Image 1: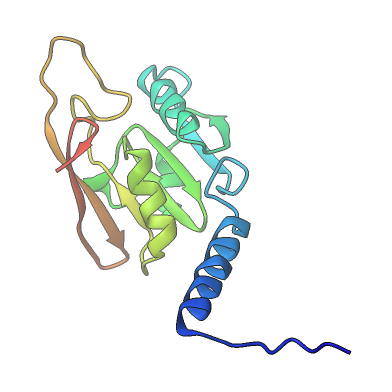
Image 2: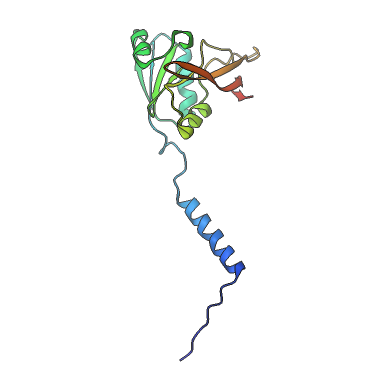
Amino acid sequence: MMTTELITTRRALMIGAAQAGVAITLSWPSQSAETLPKMVVTHDPSCGCCGVWIAHVKAAGFPVEVVRTAKLAPLKTGLGVPKILASCHTAQIGGYVIEGHVPADAIKRLLIERPKAIGLAVAGMPTGSPGMEMPGTPPETYDVVLFAPDSHHVFARYRGSQKI
């Protein structure tokens, strides 16, 4: 009967640990359209830029349900959107409110970091923000604001669709 002696070396342990790490990482689901939560976007049916913003978040992998209504003010008030941050459309996703032309990557960051807040907002309709692109017009610099019941602060700053 032949016996094999197992000799464990530091190198063998490191290789085994690396292989296990790769196997675990590859088994985790990626943040794709299948894993992103559904976003419900409510907007006025006569608004054209809202549809362009919806196309932006869909292209980023978010499944979207669209609700059209001319009565947005009661929804915004009920969800806690401050009047100073109000814009043309309101979305709900993962327990958060998204107000206005917020870039998709800021929404993904919000869903990963999960801060204590009501949501994110881009006040008004800044030129160059997602859904507000105008060929030949330079994009504005604007803030994505994280807001809570009694406070708000800058979450990210963008020029057009580029984070700065």
